[in-house]
Image 1 (tube, rainbow, N blue to C red):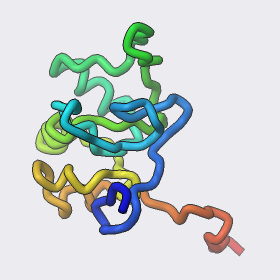
Image 2 (image 1 turned 45 degrees about the vertical axis):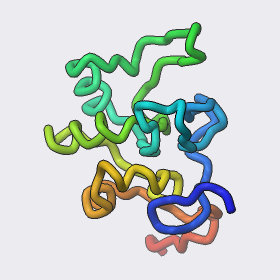
Image 3 (image 1 turned 90 degrees about the horizontal axis):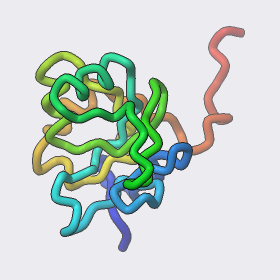
Image 4 (image 1 turned 90 degrees about the vertical axis):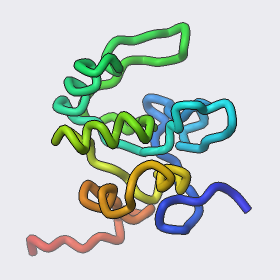
Length: 133
């Protein structure tokens, strides 16, 4: 069985443009080498990026040596559980894609906190109904 998300389903990809994940595989998979637990699939906002810079985690500046392009608002990125939780406590949490957030995050972040910021959509967004008819 593959990696599971916080909802108990198969872990879905988080983002490929830019290519995210501790293993740069597009998913928030984790393993023993991932000491920071890059398990939260966040849709970064400017407020979140500014907060991360203030706490010493600059996610905006490119670092090619780590295959890191630098993020802009709207990018999906696997962020560390501890830094996302800190942003949540400081009122600057980024939205979260629950289907793409690894279940291991629940060791650090309560599901109720993640759900407050959920921006999940079906895998096939074309199934959403147009409510403005």
